[in-house]
Length: 485
Image 1 (tube, rainbow, N blue to C red):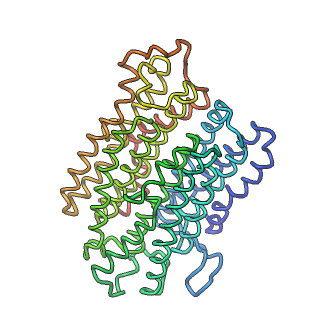
Image 2: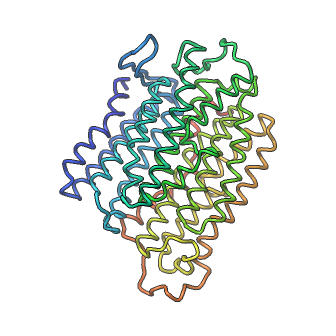
Image 3: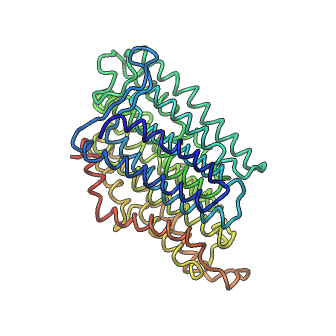
């Protein structure tokens, strides 16, 4: 495949958003365009799997502002993994969004699907970035393109949530991420991603490296490390398909993908292992894993509980990066995919429950499993995957993360991951338990049933993916082979 295709794949969803806008008067055609665009994008990206797995690194520079500083794309295994997850899940999310938006008679549906396409375009730009400047540009594009989605309802609550969302993400990126990029350029004379890292000969001490690493990780606000995590629960005011986009397809996955990419291609795993510069952020991630889980246990609003679950689960990936171990990178990369399938299923289920019953609190779900058996069965499957119990795919990412912790000598992190799994059981399995084993509330109508098929089919597909990836994790292991034992 020619490297020229990288630019076309980045631009393709944005260009097709114009056609989505033009077909807005015909909803069936508009949504068909969105689905076909998603499938075509995934197919185009999948063509690079074989060459990248074989060692090819397609690269393209569109233009330079300064020597070595410009808009450039390079495709490597981590970026390809993220691009495949984002484009692959976009198609099922689009089908689900069509059912949800129509079922709830949402307004401005054309604007919704246009912004969806723009957000995916920005996510693919992040995945293909060849240097820090390109990464920063598409990172900001992703923030701005998702803001109208977060504030979609247009009420006071949505506007307040949008202000928190935009305020935290722009403050961290401009206040931390951009200065970190400038410092890196001043120290190394380069901002181009390098498999050997950039700081090997920069003479950067342990304290300086640790401070710069922290600046980068906090600058990547989409990774939702505490205390810069509040944007994520605040964004739950958005329609559920947006929550699925934020938590599984694009935004948060962009954040943790960037953390992995910075660790491998800017600092270098060996450099961090030799200096111990990532240890402080490793403990920040550990605190986030446990702290967010404890908060999730206190939330009765279903989407809020899932939001704090996401904050916790994202820090699994940050832990994988900060361990400064190849196995940690492998576990973090696997968790990008495994968490995506499980968490998008949970949000699909939350949206289906709301569409069918207009209930959004955990305490209101008693006995609903009899009316919505497919939805709550899918919720159970995805929950078990996040907990990390066979036969669900989530076991593999936790396995490699724990192995990475042992390999790097951070045995306390194994206890953090184990305790987090126990907390996952408490706050996730309560939902299907209430649905299947509690008597229905007196005010539950007898004629309730599953949400529209456009909601139920996508959540069934993604729940099935949680099982499939347990028995067939090989595609991800092949893609992440540079970090496999």
